[in-house]
Length: 99
Image (cartoon, rainbow, N blue to C red):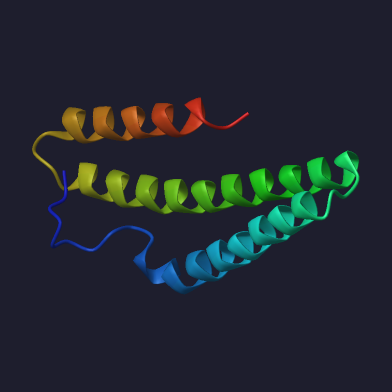
């Protein structure tokens, strides 16, 4: 397992991830405004679905980069089984929250 001082797998995609998160933040603020203005429920639900899809995409990007990083570590590790178990655990945690 990597220490906090080692680079995370997604770091080279950090700007893309941050840009996506800022866009999601804007979408959420838009939904808040829609609720305050009592907009049509179907329109609100459509926006909620868009936010969910966008956040799942961010999670997918981070998971993909983490997986590649872990597999690279596993190839160079004495304890390959432990690294792979950690990766599987991470994937299972992520999938728990994805429809």
